Image 1 (cartoon, rainbow, N blue to C red):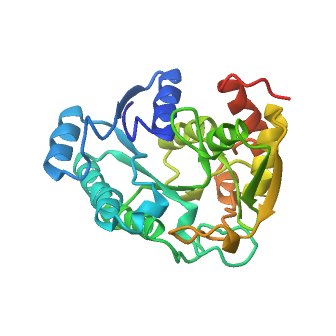
Image 2: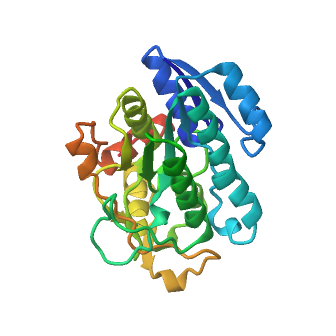
Length: 284
């Protein structure tokens, strides 16, 4: 099976390519320098020449705050880029997997969102990712749409790396304590996506590590496992204003994954330990 993975230079795309190679799949990873997905002709030429059996579309404009001001750039990648890839996948009859986000929801309530719950994004990034979802559904009869949250992996910047960096110069940190969700380790998620793309179980799925926490809880666990003596003060969203609004509830229900027979991701605390080992931290 020949698989094209976009966003290869990012956290998830890199791990997806590595995981696919373990399964002896023919993996082709591309970053934005190799392929500008906003250029329809470039996409058509590249993909039609490669003739993949499947496309796993991880590339995205993910700077949530910047997206509020760089709307055209965000739309071009997340909507137009997705359209270009979905259309060429349809022409070739290739399977298509699109990674989306918890930010398609408004974050109201405190129960986990189901795949069937109504999307209502409260920031521009979330809006563009949901527009991408709609394009995938409208273009292709069958597809995989996988909503993920709070992503961390070796090949890129993320919350874990930020906390570890700040711990070098701070013994006390204020971290938002009223936004809840599930961290998602790209190493684990990549295994699921490779399992999924080899199946015919199309549809919309939620995928993240098991268990829920706040950002403050996540920070405390990072410092505990890495042996850093840092006090975490849980603060409110109002006390930490950002350019883009964030949903307070990003909990995603993973019951559909289980019902369809897919392997659930491990508990987020266990995956954090694995990740810190990957970063060469001695886990406490």
